[in-house]
Amino acid sequence: MNINSFNFFNKRALIRVDFNVPINNEGQVTDDTRIRMAIPTIKKVLESNGSVVLMSHLGRPKDEFEKKYSLSQIVEHSGKALRSVHFFC
Image 1 (cartoon, one colour):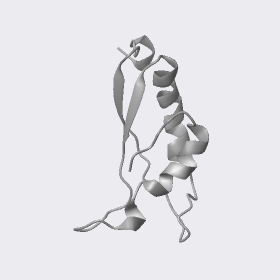
Image 2 (cartoon, helix red, strand yellow):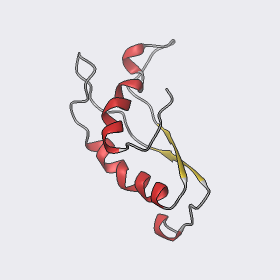
Image 3 (cartoon, helix red, strand yellow):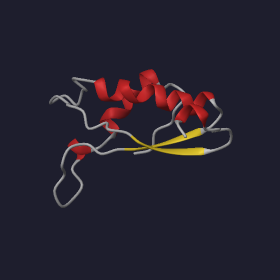
Image 4 (cartoon, helix red, strand yellow):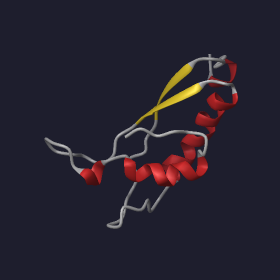
């Protein structure tokens, strides 16, 4: 079975994406290749009337929360291509 043969209607898809992308000191994505590569898969589920939950990581945080590794930095950039997607960080 592949993604094109699966019926996503009224289903929720958990998709592990690699959004561990380079970010500059201003918190801007400097290379969005990994984000762009995930978009066709995400859109396939959405266009099939399914819903999507994305799972990723950013960087290598140590023992506690570090804001510089928050995926909230990715949301603004990703939101441009995925307008119908809501992000929770």
